Amino acid sequence: MAPSERQRPSATKKCKAAEAALAEEEEDVKEAEALDADMKVDGGGGDSEEDDVELEIESEEEEEERVDGEMYGVPEQGDNSTEETEEVTAVEPPFKKVLTKKALEKARRTQEKRGVVYLGSIPPHMKPMKMRQLLSPFGALDRMYLTPEDPSVRLRRKRFGGNTGKNFTEGWVEFRDKAQARATAQMLNGNAIGGKRRSAYYSDLWNIRYLPKFKWDNLVEEIEFQKALREQKMQLELAVAKKERDFYLQKVEQSKQIQKMQQRRETESGAGSGGNDGPPLDREETKDEYDARAAREKQLRREDRNALLRRFKQRTRIGDFNVDDARGMLAPDLLRDIFSGSSAQQGA
Image (cartoon, one colour):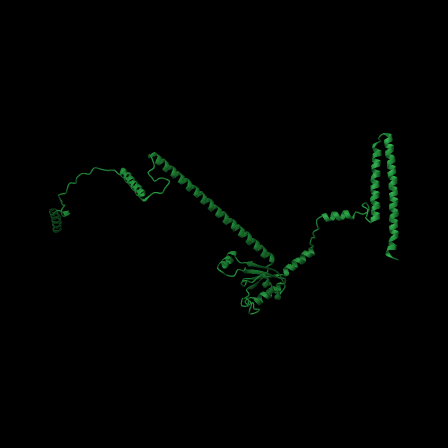
C-alpha cells in the first residue's frame, strides 16, 4: 500500500473532528446569544449569570485550541507540558559536577606520580617551544615555565645594537612520570645539547637537576610569593619617593616665604632711608654703579665697626733711663752692675 493511502484515514478523521467542533461551536454561540437576549429582556441579570457566560467562553476557547492541536499535531497544554519544562531547564544554571572520593583519590595519585626538573640556565635565544621539543623524547611533558630576563637588560642590549629577542634565565619542566624526570636529569646534566652542527645550541651544556618532593603547586606558591614581595617593595619605594617629594616641596615653599620676607624687609628699609640707592628696576646695573654701590657699602661697614670700638686718649711715653733707646738695649752701667754682682756672689 502506498504511503499516501495509509495517511488518508487519519486526514479524514481529522476533518470530521474539525467539522464536529465547528458545529458544537455554532451551537454554543447560539446558546450564548439566547442567554444575552434573555438578560436584556430581564433588564440585567445577576453576577452568577455573568460568571456562567465567562466560563462558557473560556471553555469554547479551550475547545478551539484542542481542535487545532488535533489538526496540526500540536500537543495539548493540559496533557503534556514538555515545552514548559524545557524552558525552565534552559533558564536554570548548568549543574556543576562534584568529584567523588574515588575521583579525588585518583587525581591525587596522578599528581604524586609527576616530577619536576629545574633548569639553572637557558641557552641564549632559546624559546619554550624549542625546549619542549628537545625534552619530549625523554618522557611525556606536562607543564613548563621559563623565567624571562629583566626588561632593563633587554633594553640595554637593544640600545647597544645587540639581539632584540627575549631571553630566559631559568625554568621548570614537569614530567608526568617522576622516574623519567630523574633519569633525564641524571643523563643530560653537564652534557652538550648536541643535534645538528649548524644549530645555535650545539655547543651549549645542559644545566638540569631533578627536584625530589617538589610539585608544581610549590612553584606556583613561590611565584605568587615573589610577586607579592615585589609589589610590596614597589609600594614601599613609592611611599619613600612620595615622602621625599613632599619634603622637597615643603622646603621650596619655605624658601619662597623667606625670599618674600627678605624682599619685604628690604622694601621697608629702603622706604625708611628715604629712597632706594640701587639702579632702576627696568634695567641691569652697570659696572660704575656697581663699584659706587660697593664703595658705599664698604664705607658703611667701616663706620659701623668704628662706632662699636672704644677709643681712649693716648699720652706721650716717658723714656726709661736704664734702656738705651738708640741701641735698643740696656745701659752699660746697668749691665756692669748686674754682672759684677753675680760674679761677687760666685766668689763668696
